[in-house]
Image (tube, rainbow, N blue to C red; front, top):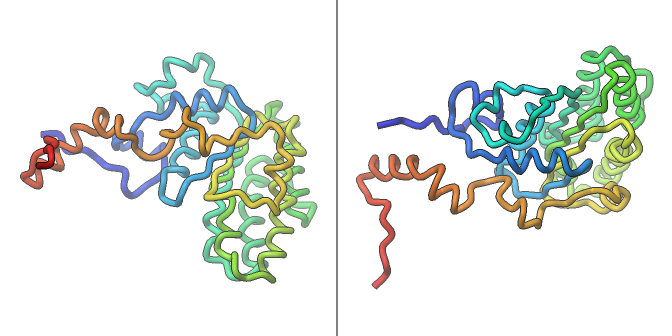
Length: 255
Protein backbone atom coordinates (compact mmCIF):
# COMPACT_ATOMS: atom_id res chain seq x y z
CA UNK A 1 0.00 0.00 0.00
CA UNK A 2 1.25 3.49 -0.85
CA UNK A 3 2.70 5.48 2.03
CA UNK A 4 1.97 9.17 1.59
CA UNK A 5 4.48 11.87 2.43
CA UNK A 6 2.63 14.51 4.39
CA UNK A 7 4.03 18.08 4.44
CA UNK A 8 3.49 18.53 8.17
CA UNK A 9 6.95 19.97 8.72
CA UNK A 10 7.13 22.61 5.99
CA UNK A 11 5.25 25.43 4.28
CA UNK A 12 7.75 25.57 1.40
CA UNK A 13 6.06 24.85 -1.93
CA UNK A 14 9.41 24.08 -3.58
CA UNK A 15 10.30 21.50 -0.93
CA UNK A 16 6.87 19.87 -1.06
CA UNK A 17 7.02 19.46 -4.82
CA UNK A 18 10.66 18.40 -5.06
CA UNK A 19 10.24 15.79 -2.32
CA UNK A 20 6.99 14.45 -3.74
CA UNK A 21 4.94 15.31 -0.67
CA UNK A 22 1.17 15.50 -0.76
CA UNK A 23 -0.10 18.80 -2.21
CA UNK A 24 -3.78 19.74 -2.54
CA UNK A 25 -3.97 21.67 -5.79
CA UNK A 26 -5.06 25.31 -5.36
CA UNK A 27 -3.18 26.65 -8.34
CA UNK A 28 -6.25 27.46 -10.44
CA UNK A 29 -7.38 29.98 -7.81
CA UNK A 30 -3.83 31.29 -7.48
CA UNK A 31 -3.67 31.84 -11.25
CA UNK A 32 -6.98 33.69 -11.31
CA UNK A 33 -5.94 36.05 -8.51
CA UNK A 34 -2.54 36.69 -10.06
CA UNK A 35 -4.01 37.59 -13.42
CA UNK A 36 -7.23 39.36 -12.48
CA UNK A 37 -6.10 41.68 -9.66
CA UNK A 38 -3.18 43.90 -8.69
CA UNK A 39 -3.58 43.97 -4.90
CA UNK A 40 -4.99 41.05 -2.90
CA UNK A 41 -5.43 40.64 0.85
CA UNK A 42 -6.29 37.39 2.65
CA UNK A 43 -7.10 37.08 6.35
CA UNK A 44 -7.02 33.65 7.95
CA UNK A 45 -6.12 32.27 11.42
CA UNK A 46 -2.59 31.16 12.17
CA UNK A 47 -1.53 27.74 10.87
CA UNK A 48 -4.09 27.85 8.08
CA UNK A 49 -1.89 27.56 4.99
CA UNK A 50 -1.27 31.24 4.24
CA UNK A 51 2.52 30.86 4.11
CA UNK A 52 2.29 27.90 1.73
CA UNK A 53 0.10 30.01 -0.55
CA UNK A 54 2.64 32.85 -0.41
CA UNK A 55 5.42 30.46 -1.38
CA UNK A 56 3.28 29.09 -4.22
CA UNK A 57 2.79 32.61 -5.56
CA UNK A 58 6.53 33.17 -5.23
CA UNK A 59 7.38 30.07 -7.30
CA UNK A 60 4.78 30.99 -9.92
CA UNK A 61 6.04 34.54 -10.42
CA UNK A 62 9.67 33.38 -10.46
CA UNK A 63 8.71 31.22 -13.43
CA UNK A 64 9.54 27.90 -11.77
CA UNK A 65 7.37 25.97 -14.21
CA UNK A 66 8.88 22.60 -13.34
CA UNK A 67 7.36 22.75 -9.85
CA UNK A 68 3.84 22.95 -11.26
CA UNK A 69 3.91 19.90 -13.52
CA UNK A 70 0.62 18.03 -13.23
CA UNK A 71 -1.17 20.89 -11.46
CA UNK A 72 -4.17 22.87 -12.71
CA UNK A 73 -2.18 25.99 -13.53
CA UNK A 74 -0.36 24.14 -16.31
CA UNK A 75 -3.58 24.15 -18.33
CA UNK A 76 -4.04 27.89 -17.76
CA UNK A 77 -0.63 29.54 -17.98
CA UNK A 78 0.90 29.76 -21.47
CA UNK A 79 3.75 32.26 -21.05
CA UNK A 80 5.48 31.62 -17.69
CA UNK A 81 7.12 35.01 -17.37
CA UNK A 82 9.73 35.58 -14.68
CA UNK A 83 9.41 38.56 -12.35
CA UNK A 84 11.57 39.89 -9.52
CA UNK A 85 9.86 38.87 -6.27
CA UNK A 86 10.23 40.58 -2.88
CA UNK A 87 8.91 38.25 -0.18
CA UNK A 88 8.68 39.51 3.40
CA UNK A 89 7.69 37.12 6.19
CA UNK A 90 6.79 39.40 9.09
CA UNK A 91 6.24 36.47 11.46
CA UNK A 92 9.98 36.37 12.14
CA UNK A 93 9.44 39.54 14.18
CA UNK A 94 7.17 37.74 16.64
CA UNK A 95 9.83 37.35 19.32
CA UNK A 96 11.21 40.88 19.10
CA UNK A 97 10.67 42.79 22.34
CA UNK A 98 11.89 46.28 21.42
CA UNK A 99 11.30 48.67 18.56
CA UNK A 100 15.02 48.58 17.83
CA UNK A 101 14.97 44.80 17.46
CA UNK A 102 12.01 45.00 15.08
CA UNK A 103 13.71 47.69 13.05
CA UNK A 104 16.85 45.57 12.82
CA UNK A 105 14.88 42.57 11.53
CA UNK A 106 12.94 44.61 8.98
CA UNK A 107 16.13 46.32 7.89
CA UNK A 108 17.85 42.96 7.42
CA UNK A 109 15.01 41.73 5.19
CA UNK A 110 15.28 44.82 3.00
CA UNK A 111 19.08 44.62 2.96
CA UNK A 112 18.98 41.06 1.64
CA UNK A 113 17.24 42.29 -1.50
CA UNK A 114 19.38 45.41 -1.71
CA UNK A 115 22.43 43.17 -1.98
CA UNK A 116 20.73 40.80 -4.41
CA UNK A 117 19.75 43.56 -6.81
CA UNK A 118 22.77 45.80 -6.38
CA UNK A 119 21.42 48.82 -4.56
CA UNK A 120 22.78 50.23 -1.32
CA UNK A 121 21.25 51.57 1.85
CA UNK A 122 21.33 55.33 1.53
CA UNK A 123 18.20 56.11 3.55
CA UNK A 124 17.34 55.18 7.12
CA UNK A 125 13.53 55.39 6.74
CA UNK A 126 12.15 51.93 5.94
CA UNK A 127 9.43 53.18 3.62
CA UNK A 128 11.91 55.23 1.61
CA UNK A 129 14.35 52.30 1.43
CA UNK A 130 11.57 50.02 0.23
CA UNK A 131 10.56 52.58 -2.38
CA UNK A 132 14.17 52.99 -3.52
CA UNK A 133 14.55 49.21 -3.80
CA UNK A 134 11.39 48.75 -5.89
CA UNK A 135 12.25 51.57 -8.27
CA UNK A 136 15.84 50.36 -8.64
CA UNK A 137 14.72 46.83 -9.50
CA UNK A 138 12.17 48.13 -11.98
CA UNK A 139 14.72 50.38 -13.69
CA UNK A 140 17.59 47.86 -13.80
CA UNK A 141 15.59 44.70 -14.52
CA UNK A 142 13.13 46.31 -16.91
CA UNK A 143 10.24 44.54 -15.21
CA UNK A 144 7.54 45.26 -12.70
CA UNK A 145 8.05 43.86 -9.21
CA UNK A 146 5.97 41.33 -7.27
CA UNK A 147 5.61 42.01 -3.53
CA UNK A 148 4.46 39.31 -1.09
CA UNK A 149 4.00 40.25 2.58
CA UNK A 150 3.08 37.30 4.78
CA UNK A 151 1.62 37.73 8.30
CA UNK A 152 1.84 41.52 7.94
CA UNK A 153 0.10 42.05 11.30
CA UNK A 154 2.27 39.78 13.48
CA UNK A 155 4.32 42.65 15.02
CA UNK A 156 1.14 44.52 16.04
CA UNK A 157 -0.69 41.42 17.27
CA UNK A 158 2.23 40.49 19.52
CA UNK A 159 2.27 43.94 21.10
CA UNK A 160 -1.41 44.85 21.36
CA UNK A 161 -1.16 45.63 25.07
CA UNK A 162 2.11 47.53 24.94
CA UNK A 163 0.81 50.99 24.06
CA UNK A 164 4.20 52.72 24.03
CA UNK A 165 5.78 50.14 21.74
CA UNK A 166 2.67 49.80 19.56
CA UNK A 167 2.59 53.52 18.76
CA UNK A 168 6.19 53.52 17.54
CA UNK A 169 5.67 50.26 15.68
CA UNK A 170 2.66 51.61 13.78
CA UNK A 171 4.67 54.64 12.73
CA UNK A 172 7.56 52.48 11.54
CA UNK A 173 5.41 50.04 9.58
CA UNK A 174 2.95 52.56 8.14
CA UNK A 175 5.53 54.02 5.78
CA UNK A 176 6.80 50.59 4.79
CA UNK A 177 3.34 49.25 3.92
CA UNK A 178 2.16 52.43 2.23
CA UNK A 179 4.96 52.02 -0.29
CA UNK A 180 2.92 49.32 -2.04
CA UNK A 181 0.31 51.98 -2.79
CA UNK A 182 2.70 54.76 -3.78
CA UNK A 183 4.75 52.49 -6.08
CA UNK A 184 1.78 50.97 -7.91
CA UNK A 185 3.21 51.94 -11.31
CA UNK A 186 6.23 49.70 -10.66
CA UNK A 187 4.37 46.69 -9.26
CA UNK A 188 3.01 43.66 -11.11
CA UNK A 189 1.18 42.08 -8.14
CA UNK A 190 0.92 42.53 -4.38
CA UNK A 191 -0.29 39.77 -2.05
CA UNK A 192 -0.68 40.33 1.69
CA UNK A 193 -1.83 37.97 4.43
CA UNK A 194 -2.68 38.43 8.07
CA UNK A 195 -5.15 37.58 10.80
CA UNK A 196 -7.04 40.88 10.75
CA UNK A 197 -7.00 44.45 9.44
CA UNK A 198 -5.39 47.29 11.37
CA UNK A 199 -7.13 50.52 10.35
CA UNK A 200 -4.41 52.61 12.01
CA UNK A 201 -1.97 51.62 9.27
CA UNK A 202 -4.32 53.18 6.68
CA UNK A 203 -3.14 50.89 3.88
CA UNK A 204 -6.54 49.29 3.45
CA UNK A 205 -8.44 52.56 3.23
CA UNK A 206 -5.95 54.02 0.75
CA UNK A 207 -5.74 51.04 -1.61
CA UNK A 208 -8.90 51.62 -3.63
CA UNK A 209 -8.18 48.65 -5.91
CA UNK A 210 -7.45 46.18 -3.11
CA UNK A 211 -9.30 42.87 -3.52
CA UNK A 212 -10.10 41.42 -0.10
CA UNK A 213 -10.85 37.73 -0.55
CA UNK A 214 -11.12 36.81 3.13
CA UNK A 215 -14.93 36.41 3.01
CA UNK A 216 -15.24 35.72 -0.71
CA UNK A 217 -17.02 32.44 -1.46
CA UNK A 218 -15.06 32.03 -4.69
CA UNK A 219 -11.81 31.77 -2.71
CA UNK A 220 -13.05 30.25 0.54
CA UNK A 221 -11.06 27.08 -0.14
CA UNK A 222 -7.79 28.68 -1.20
CA UNK A 223 -6.25 27.72 2.15
CA UNK A 224 -6.90 24.70 4.30
CA UNK A 225 -8.79 21.58 3.26
CA UNK A 226 -12.40 21.55 2.09
CA UNK A 227 -14.81 18.67 2.60
CA UNK A 228 -14.74 17.98 -1.14
CA UNK A 229 -10.93 17.75 -1.10
CA UNK A 230 -11.12 15.46 1.90
CA UNK A 231 -13.51 13.18 0.04
CA UNK A 232 -11.52 13.18 -3.22
CA UNK A 233 -7.85 14.19 -3.19
CA UNK A 234 -7.29 13.08 0.40
CA UNK A 235 -9.53 10.01 0.28
CA UNK A 236 -6.62 7.55 -0.14
CA UNK A 237 -4.88 9.18 2.82
CA UNK A 238 -7.99 8.86 4.99
CA UNK A 239 -8.33 5.21 4.02
CA UNK A 240 -4.66 4.55 4.79
CA UNK A 241 -5.03 6.21 8.19
CA UNK A 242 -8.20 4.24 8.94
CA UNK A 243 -6.50 0.96 7.98
CA UNK A 244 -3.59 1.69 10.32
CA UNK A 245 -6.09 2.26 13.13
CA UNK A 246 -8.11 -0.82 12.11
CA UNK A 247 -11.30 1.22 11.74
CA UNK A 248 -13.67 1.84 8.83
CA UNK A 249 -14.21 5.04 6.86
CA UNK A 250 -17.91 4.28 6.35
CA UNK A 251 -20.33 6.82 7.74
CA UNK A 252 -22.72 5.44 10.32
CA UNK A 253 -26.25 6.72 10.70
CA UNK A 254 -26.99 7.50 14.36
CA UNK A 255 -29.73 5.43 15.99
